[in-house]
Image (cartoon, rainbow, N blue to C red; front, top):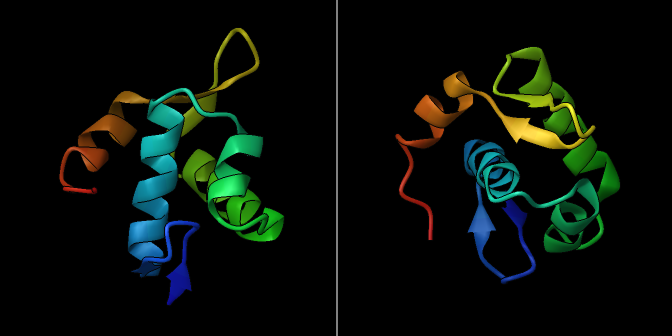
Length: 80
């Protein structure tokens, strides 16, 4: 179990979903790392995983962007 900067305990699947949501909101990797208390390794591992399963990709502006598959997956979660 992990804790995000809001003090909430979250599972690995929730971590994946939160990072996916933050990417869909246009947050940068640096901003996402801040939410996870500066845990660079955690965030980069999940970003790499999300890229490998084609839920996020780099767009033409070299920014993280959610893919249609990632959006479909994210729609299944009700994150606060």
